[in-house]
Length: 108
Image (cartoon, rainbow, N blue to C red):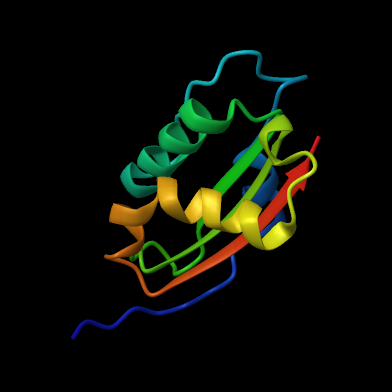
């Protein structure tokens, strides 16, 4: 078992890690993301072609809890439970190694 100090990231950091199509036309992972965040970002960007994507390790850098917000046309007309299942399927291998996932999907 391992331990990790959990702390909330400052609001400015959360904003710095966000991605929107209007400000970032390519789907490259932002450079300030850590390795785990970048891996999740790339998988979701490849699969869903989102207009907005935010991936953040909210476990204080341990990689045990992630908060994800994703907006995509792929979710349009699909119930929220099924939207979350689609994301979970893409992240199936990643989810095996973490303790928690906070997910917000937004249909476009």
